[in-house]
Length: 252
Image 1 (cartoon, rainbow, N blue to C red):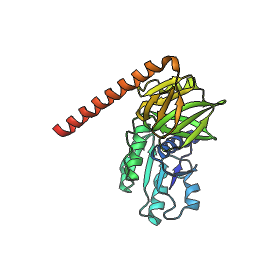
Image 2 (cartoon, helix red, strand yellow; image 1 turned 90 degrees about the vertical axis):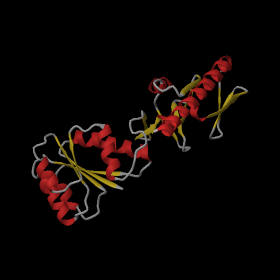
Image 3 (cartoon, rainbow, N blue to C red; image 1 turned 45 degrees about the horizontal axis):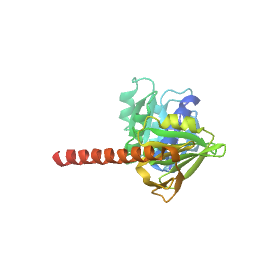
Image 4 (cartoon, one colour; image 1 turned 180 degrees about the vertical axis):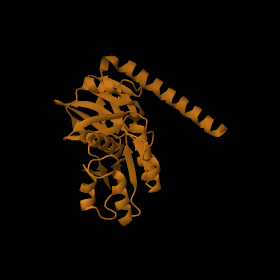
């Protein structure tokens, strides 16, 4: 799907594009973002159904977003337009055009995820869940913590493997990765250079940690008993938490 951003401020375009790309990564969507710096620029090439969504700044030199929206909707009544503005001054006029939504700058990640969910008729699972963000092959990649299978050193690079079997390499150090993941109790350092998500451990034995995807990774032999105990205690805690949630659902 295609999403257009129309804003005369490049830093606003880059900030919004970054959140949209993160949203695409989290939801495993193919999204192409097209940026325009004026109303005239998008109107010059616009045709019906060109974009799934249009983020349109109201205040721009040379032509307002209000006028651009009116022109777009005359030719494409089904266009989904989301106004961006630093003031509520034009809100009544904006909504008189029946645009989809109205966002005050700077919009936070949660607000943008919510409007993207609503406009695309999706529900982002745990949109507030921490996301592991890194650069791989010059692209920004975002993977939810819950979908990280393991992280390990791979020569000079770091390899991140997700639950879909995708593998990414980044120049981040293992120390930096451990620091990012340290706030989440599900991650366990097996040995120097290997961190795994305990939700996906199948077994730890014979000096190896066997993951649910069939892969096996090394374990620090000296700390094997402690690592096994940590994993088992985590499993017990997870089962208890799941039972509590079931009781809440049953009693609701």
